[in-house]
Length: 211
Image (tube, rainbow, N blue to C red; front, side, top):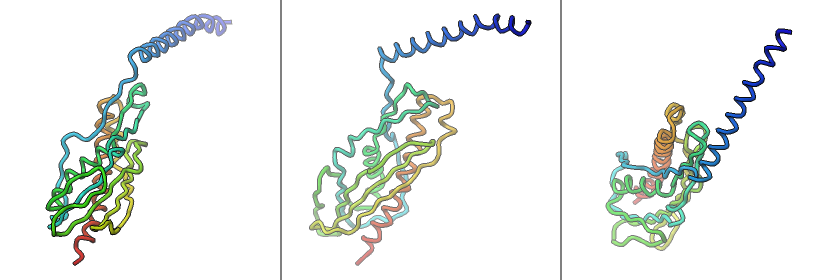
């Protein structure tokens, strides 16, 4: 029959295509085994924004342990190239946002890896910060920031968590490759952190506005 002959004619081509695909996959695997999967370090670059809060005549010590700033969260994406790994540093991002916002809110501040109290006679507080969760799924970042505020003498003022999602970055990721993925992670993470810090600043202002 003509149909059978047509199928027989296609079979060699099909086998040839399968062999090519298998050889391509084998070469890709060999290449990755020899060179390793590319890793892309992800943290914020030059960031800066203006906050709405006033600056208080107060001093703050922000406690961010080394374990937080050194944490790495690996992210992979089929859309942007599964052979790549984006090593996101959520604790380092946290520190970067602190360095943008706290000079605007406090007359003086510094960051410490362990609990210590600010010096001076004016209003003082200690803020212990940590990122308890970081994820990048469905084209957007999700962060949970935990904050514990203390008055001098380690008197608790509040303990809260702030969970926020960044803007979706699907359009930027689609077909953009490794560098577009890196940019998407940064942009969505930055948006999530700014949202979390806006709520944190409101809680800090409520404390600092008290007589």
